[in-house]
Image (cartoon, rainbow, N blue to C red; front, side):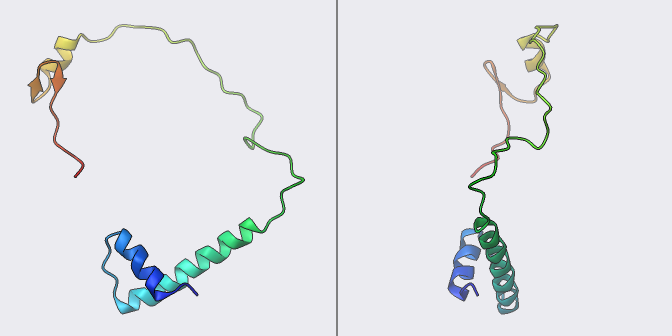
Length: 94
C-alpha cells in the first residue's frame, strides 16, 4: 500500500487539506491505480505491431482559404478595454 507520507506529499502538491478519513481512502485509491498501471506495464508488447490509430481513416485537410474577416479597428471597438492594438483582459494566472 502507498505510504501515508506519499499521500500527504501528493495532497500538498495539489494544495489539498486531507483529513485522516480521506487519507485512508486516498491510500487505497492510489494503491489501486498504481496496481493497475503496474499490470499495464507488465504486458509484453515486443512482438505487437505499432498502431498509431485504431482506424485506417486518413485525415482530410482542406486548403486554407482567406475569406472575409473583420478589420482590426472593428475588433477593437467591441472590446471593453484597449491599449494600442491590444485588448486588455483580466489576469487569469497567478
